[in-house]
Amino acid sequence: MARKAVTVYLDIAAYQKLRKLIAPKTISRELDDLIKKRIAELEGKEYNPLESADYEELKREYERLLKDTEKMERTLKKRGTYQKLIAVTDEIEEELGTKDLKTVIPMLLDRWKGPKEDAHLFINFLEKLKKMKDAERQLEKIRRGGRDVD
Image (cartoon, rainbow, N blue to C red; front, top):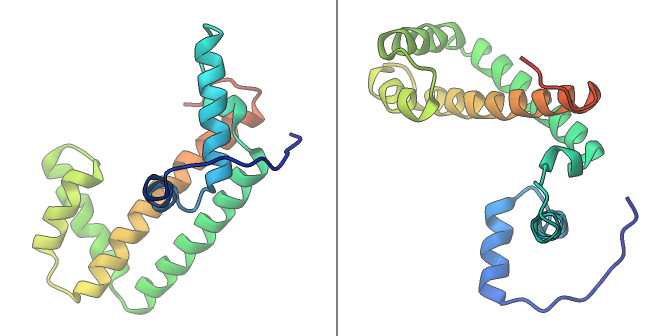
């Protein structure tokens, strides 16, 4: 994809808020996606973000998430809390019948009797793992030529 620097005048507060909300994605990538979405809308087509996703950026993000989750897992295992946190989380998921993190996390914080920093590191681990799995699905879909992945 060829890129060109252009000048765009934006509201400073809106720019700064968007920059925080989309991190680590850059404003340039976000604006590029918004422009492509708007073009598709004006042409009466459906916008497919996977088709316009930056493949190299997605690969880098996947690698970063993989390294981060592996490091967190090692840290929790060294502290001897990884398996205990997995067991508590599995118990909660089975009890609630869901793996939705927004539902599971509050109960995990209530039930965990170990160090709070381990619980929060584990929650960060779960959230990053979810992002990594999403990136993995996107990569697989792209690499399979756009076919859906189960």
